[in-house]
View (cartoon, rainbow, N blue to C red):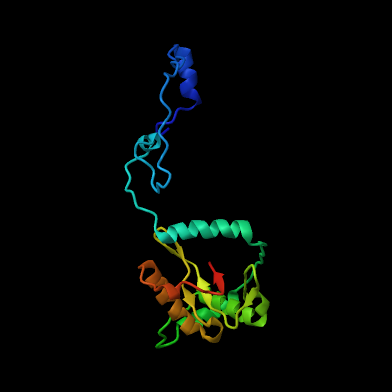
Length: 201
């Protein structure tokens, strides 16, 4: 299938007497080591002969940072998982009511409700709105909610500043604007750096 050799191919070759032992490998010089500071693979590497046609797109700084941060997170930050099933019939009815109002200049998503609820929870339990450093735990005085947004080549987290103080319509409009500009690569650094908490759907 798709060019792969499977069991029936081997059995058929043995039955037909066409299977042959591999010829002894000829002595070959050891492959040259890549330059110590090289950031790219050499196209002389045999693996390239096995790949379909491709376009080489260099890693961005964002991509490198993602790799570094995910590794650091998995290694250094204590993790625990919480899970709960929630019936949100009333929330969905409220969402429908709000979005159907005449003249509404917003479309509230379930994610917007989650951003608001999480922001309020962090104001009620401020010990969760913190960052750990070697020297101290930093306790923030407002919630700057980072929202995970998938973009070409990675993930970015635009930030809604002081999200707990904002209404659903404002949160919805800001989230939509930030996510749209994130996907277009038009965010300024301060719009995706420095959040106090991150939420993802």
